[in-house]
Image (cartoon, rainbow, N blue to C red; front, side, top):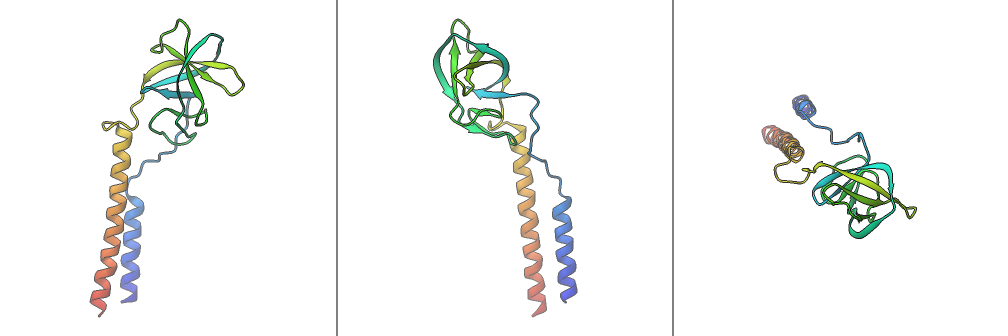
Length: 149
């Protein structure tokens, strides 16, 4: 009976390991900030005439996508500013920590964290499959213990 239990545990573990999973670690191609639902690519151009503060980084990660005003370069609390005579639909300024402001050009809409985001759906599916695997293993152990009695 002990061998059957070990065999079933190995099968359960094997099934859990072969389930398709998506790695969520990311390799960023460029430095960026997210503000007001859009990605702004940060370039090496400095801005001298900033206007008013419009937001700040609320989440930072150099490995995983985040929701909100997220950045892969700047720490939480880094401030965003509008640029004098430039629409924020085109570009914003990001405080770089040395009292200077780097220009960040609007690239595209940032969809991570939205209900329709494909990234969120794939991670939900993976979590569901892993949970089902754990429940299956638990049930196999429970049934085997009942049979053993």
